[in-house]
Image: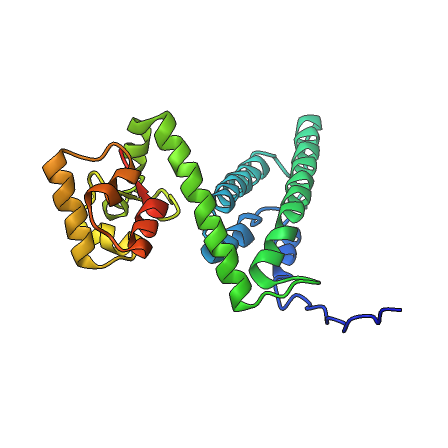
Length: 230
C-alpha cells in the first residue's frame, strides 16, 4: 500500500480584507479603490477597466444621492424621493455585491490565498505567461488592423502610447536601442537588424530577420518571440 505523501501546508491570505471592508462600509461609493490598488500591483488592463467602471458607478451613486430631497432628519421627502431612495439603495447593493464577487479572485492574485504558494517564482512565471498572452493579442490586432496597431503604439514602447503589448518591438521602425532593449540582445546585433532593414527597405515578416542578419541562435529566438513587422 502506498504511503500518503507529505502534507503541504496551506498558505492563508496575508492581507486584502480591507478590499471588502472599504467596499461594504462605503456602500459601494469607494468600491473603485481596491480595484485601483490591484491594478497598481498587477498592471492588468482588465483590472484597470474595472477600476474605471467602479469609479464611474461610485460617482453616479453620489450624484443620485444628492438629487434626493430630504428633511433635516435625512428622510426622503415625497413619494418621488422615496422611490429614488429605493433605487439608490438597490443600485448601491448591486454595486457592493458585484464588486465583492470580482474582488475575491483579485485579492488572491494580489495577496495570495488558501492552497496557493505565492512564491517569487510563481509570480515571475505568471507574469511571463501573462506577457506572452498580451503579445499574442497584440499580434492579432496588428494582423487585423495595422493602422490601429500603429495608433496603439504596438511594437513601439519608445512612443509611450500606453498600450501594453506584452513586450513587442517593430523591427521595421523601432530604433536600434529599442530593439536591443526589448529583445534583450547585443547592441551590435540590433544595429545589424536596422542596417539590413534600411538596405532592404524593410522586412515582410520577422522570420526574415535571421535570414538577412547573422544572429546567434538565442538572439534569433528572442527576435522571433518579441519582434513584429508593421
